[in-house]
Length: 293
Image (cartoon, rainbow, N blue to C red):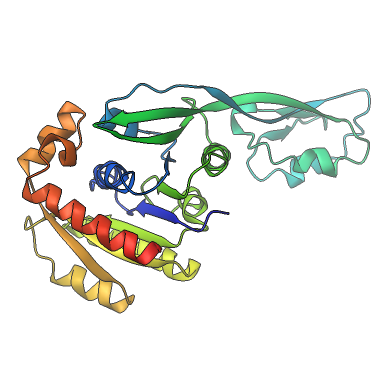
């Protein structure tokens, strides 16, 4: 696995995680052959913030079990090993598959004593690989997209991450989804550094502590970025960060210019490179490059 992997996360949604990610990607692309992975498969928006259209679609397929009823002995083992409720055992003992609930884990396939489970396939989402070219900078953006109505995000996260890491590059920037689910842990796994983006609100504080708990258990060095700094008290955030042996490396104030860049689909480091906000992102990129070498 690549040695330079940076993950950008944050327990709470809407903290500006993707804004931080795309601005850093542009700056890091000046020095590295960068591959960016948008693993927020339920709501990927890095391509929107970068103003590009997704390209090179590939389906994400998982195993879907089918039952050969002539071979089924009604033992119920398939229903016992299914932990998602996708294999429903009817009153007469025959199993029925609920495709939307199936995670494709194949437990039923391997557990069936008569090999009555047949391997099928279904598409749960797509991955894309897009060449981003902005003001003389270029990098690859790999995006995972889960189909609407699907219940299981990990297979889509794994597929998109694998595609990203198989793309030639010497620096991999991963933008995770919000929260601290197993999908977030899967996205961050193998990272050398995590940037946890938070905000000075009670919910931001609560979820910051959750993400710091997770990265601490995973043994990943974590820095904290305080976005919209100044909107509320930050003393408790400082205390929590210290308790987990982390540090706040940037305090980005609420900025109408960043909102404007968000609306225009043009990151602030390109829209207004001489601004205070762009300077803060450049300083952060320098810190990241130093620790990654």
